[in-house]
Amino acid sequence: MTQPKRIYLAGPEVFFPAGEHQAIVAEKKHVLREYGFEGVDPLDTELAFSDHEAKPDRGYRIYQANRELMDRCDAVIANLTPFRGISADPGTVYEVGYMIGQGKTAFGFTLDGRRYRERAGSTNLDDLGHKIEDFELSDNLMIESGIRDSGGQLFVAERPGEHRFFSAELFLRCVRALTHG
Image (tube, rainbow, N blue to C red):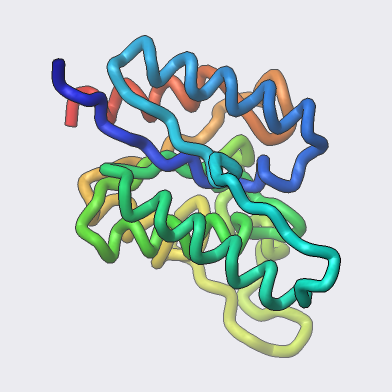
């Protein structure tokens, strides 16, 4: 029997309370299994830290562990809903770029239907006089264009989801698009 394709699950859910994170990841993995895929969450690691290990060293070990998980995956589905600001979580964006850089397909979803410029204040310049990009995209042009160039797609919510940061419907659309490659 062929091993299912492994899909890395990038997103800010790793910062949610444990029960909330586990419920969302369980839903994602369930949907992926139904389509013959294996979901891989960034917290699917066996890391243990000593009380004496410096925080930067802990952070680096988490980075290494997540990179190893991504190296063993075939594609990524990323939750790109704005998190702690007007754009997607920066760690998630890094993971999308890392996967695309390896020639892997990226799919994403966002529950914020507004375009990037609207979230930035619908103006040409920010408070410091810096230009705000206006390409009528959901996020920074490098994110959405990279996903498109990888052969993937970004799905944007037309209405709020069942959770502020997760929509089973949008996730399913990513999985179906991945299936039809």
